[in-house]
Image (cartoon, rainbow, N blue to C red; front, top):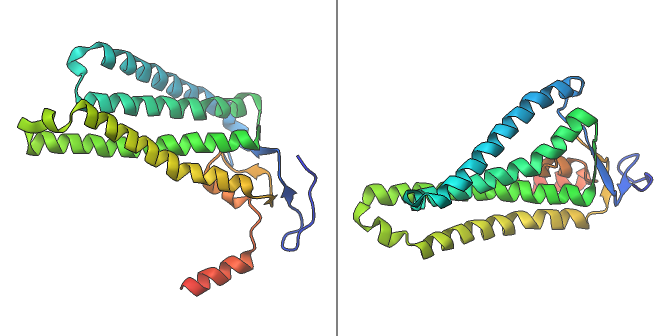
Length: 211
């Protein structure tokens, strides 16, 4: 991490920080160790349940239907979210490992928000599947063919990747940060934006102009 340098707007800032600090749960740092145990139990149940579904759906022929295929994709995204968030949070809660490389933080941000975006898209696809079943049940299989299902999943994944992928690229290009402390348990984009060096006078002028 580079040493602080003086800036015109704030007293201290950091230039191209190599690492950032995650404080955990704001205001509950003194009990985070105990919070880690129920959190670990919930994550373990979620992991086992999602793995069980990912084993059952491909192997059971009766479940080879659009609704259950979408459910399998949704299960995979939940599994990915758990893997992206839980290890670092537990390391913070139990071992006090609060530092994380800035590049790793951006990678975590990308995967978390991409998977969240995929979840919303898959839920929309599941709603469309139920709509077809209710409104046009006789043509359900002819409308939602395997090709259409693959196409829908790919569109959902590409949409989430493109929309979220821009954020870490732009954040990586920024150089000056007013702090290296993220008030969160994982790298969330709004908390990263809060530590970026911003000229408030310019922002206020922009918002006043837009009003």
